[in-house]
Length: 473
Image 1 (cartoon, helix red, strand yellow):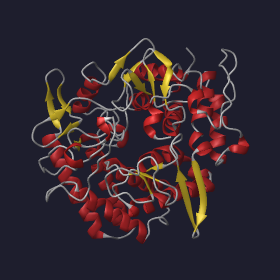
Image 2 (cartoon, rainbow, N blue to C red; image 1 turned 135 degrees about the vertical axis):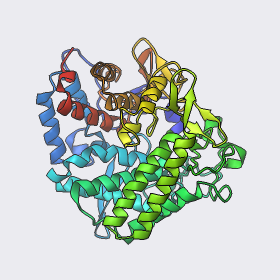
Image 3 (cartoon, rainbow, N blue to C red; image 1 turned 45 degrees about the vertical axis):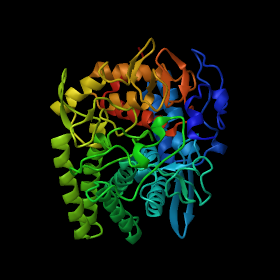
């Protein structure tokens, strides 16, 4: 079954929750829906201790139940950890899709980094993710998703692009190369361990920088194109797979968004900001760890060039909200006023370090995208929040609600987001990709580990910083 077939799935029965015994939710009793110990893919003593601690801290029994189910979901159900050639290797699937996305695999394990010092095995598992991502980038820096082995892609074998047997899908997305840098950098900062940053990793990072430069398209369209025969127009870029024209102004072209949907204007603004942050992190690592002054300087120069172009072309005047960040631009002056729920998004920019929460332009942008001025912002009987063209109209994303809470400085807004998350899991005990604004029991993707782990990250963060917001209502 491929990704498109999952999108319209609206019930646990249709998907078949492989690991879970689902029971109707009682107001007084929360059923055990977490996978049983004997079936868990990986167990972390530090994660289990945190779950136990949180059960005592969280006075709201439903939130405690949700945290218990969601926070360990990546470890419980999606990781395949082993030792290969005397090095940790970790393959991480998304959940209901048996493939490893560079984006998702990073996002799924990021909340666990703070627990590595308490759990050497957890550290090894995350080290294995870095090692596997390095291999993936060296196979093809333009691919977004990979198979565990060189088995080919049954779903996308007919895509018109340079497919390899190791690839599940080959959609070029800037953030696919930013996320591995984010994981490497934060792993290093947490552990001071430099063992994964060897010659192979350096080759992969140089390939990242070269790919970014090629996709500035200063000397033609570059080596990447993609076409797919699909009833969904957003599954493929126009004009022979190279996308709509851009003016080479220093920004990096991305044929697809983090949602795996084709861009309209190829300069995807949140992803270009993410690239600036990632390049500066990589520059620091190249300077301090590998002592590669050339790579470090190359990263700094490219980051500065992209940042300068963003200031000139990505900040635009909105007729109602003033200066805002556009979602996409083309360098000719065209722009998209919208946001997409998947991350990086405009909403999530502070989460990735792309700007501060008190940046005046971000504040204006936030007002715009959390309003009817964003065509993918929905308001319904059960919820209001950001959606995406990737999912059906009127479907709100849990990731967007979580990012809204993570980037908010307003207690009432955070409290409302938590309440919405708590009341829209459709009695399953897990987060989903999206749900209908008027009926949370209509949802897409019942096994979406990123959303689950990110929810756990939010609740853990709020419990430390604003515990009063987690009290039962």
